[in-house]
Amino acid sequence: MKSKRTPYFLLIIISFHVVFLFFSCTPNRVLPIAIPTPADNPITDAKVDLGRQLFFDKRLSINNSVSCATCHNPKFAMTDRLPISKGVYGRVAFRNAPSILNAGFLKTMMFDGHVPSLEMQAIVPLQDHAEMGHDLRVLIPKLRGIASYQTAAREIFNRDFDAFVLTRSLAAFERTLVSFQSKFDLYLAGESDALTKSQKRGWALFSGALNCVSCHPPPFFTSYEVANNGLYQVYGKDEGRFRIHNDSSDIGKFKIPSLRNVELTFPYMHDGSMTTIDDVLNHYMQGGKHHKNQDKRIRAFLLSSQDRQDIKTFLNSLTDTSFINTIYGGKSIVFPSF
Image 1 (cartoon, rainbow, N blue to C red):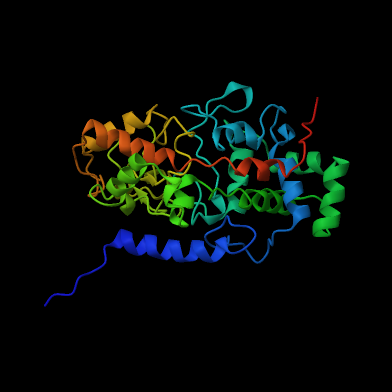
Image 2 (spheres, helix red, strand yellow; image 1 turned 90 degrees about the vertical axis):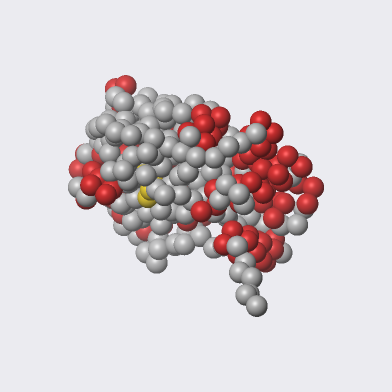
């Protein structure tokens, strides 16, 4: 007699459900697991407050016009709703700005999946010509000359304001940006009425017949992999991870994004080429554009009009704006004037 194996997606759900219930007994009731934190950057309230101020400060850009929040706007679930982000002097950046909610759980940063930590990632947009356009050799003395930043650096880190202070503070703040209070999370925690019948049918399709969980498993709704989803048959100037290692097998591979708050984070794909969820569904229903590196999990499928609606309502159940309170720390943000 053959033994029955529990489907992969059910193992994921069972594990997440158990861990979520454990944390739901605590006053926080937010996190399914602890946020990974480097030994050299423990999170403290003072450090997070400093990181928050830096995150919203346009003085981090070369012409005082762009802050981290410009591309990662709390109103849009930490995106900017532009196909391609815009930086200093109206320059056009390289890619669409992904949400940084739950970024503390990421294994690697950037669409290429090549930056290993939030601390290191902070340096990239600061010095990118088309984003914030600065030179750390100029930026650090500029920020050190701001009395409140220099005082905070001495009090928190026992050192003058420098690149270590800047990157550790920004990363500490970003690790507090968590989003785990959606209707779907409540449903997994035992509130069966948190989802509508349509959303439950959509979840059954997502986790079952369509096997979307192979790339977007809960609780984070990303597998953290880089993969080619067949967006193009021929990739143009942006060939994805290929630009990092010059390995032809990496052409068209980009980090799989989280689907949390996907209702709010349009347009979609690394280049913002898809405006709606329907555009995305149409792409996958067609089985992609069949690039030679296309992931084998991308296969054509059919959806009835009801199936399509159910999938969309399920995806909307992943929306959670509770992070707004964390963003502002219960305080009014004072934006610097020039």
